[in-house]
Image 1 (cartoon, rainbow, N blue to C red):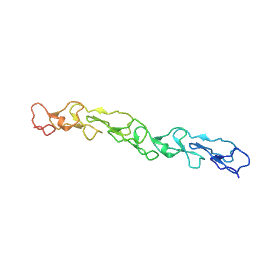
Image 2 (cartoon, rainbow, N blue to C red):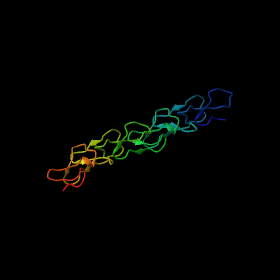
Image 3 (cartoon, rainbow, N blue to C red):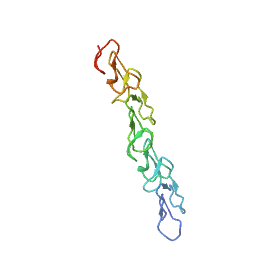
Image 4 (cartoon, helix red, strand yellow):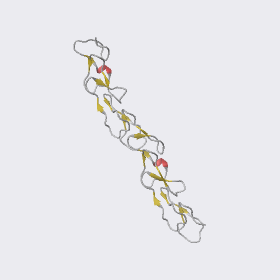
Length: 171
């Protein structure tokens, strides 16, 4: 009986076929030597070691990976190892591979694009602020001003000739 794909038999006499090591595959049947090949990067070996399968979308793995859990979310994406990787939302970024959570831009900054791989957060301009919504800077109320990089509506102060509470209506 010939060895199935993913297995080989290098000695005479025995009926036992050897399974390729984890992270390797052998796409042909009836192999007489250990011709198992490492899975390439971004792939992992299937359970029967007859082929290497691609990692899920937006995930990476090292050469010779042996399980889907070895596939880690790419930079700019987050999710469990081997699972679905989703893009960091606007206002967040992730600079490393893996399942770490996306990092929120600091208060007073914003990031208008999703899937950012680096800290590309930009400071809010004058008369704008960001506090909880870090995907965009919000304008100060009418007749109020703030310095660039403001992190709360309370940083908006009534302009000259107007009065009112910080961050409130200036009349």
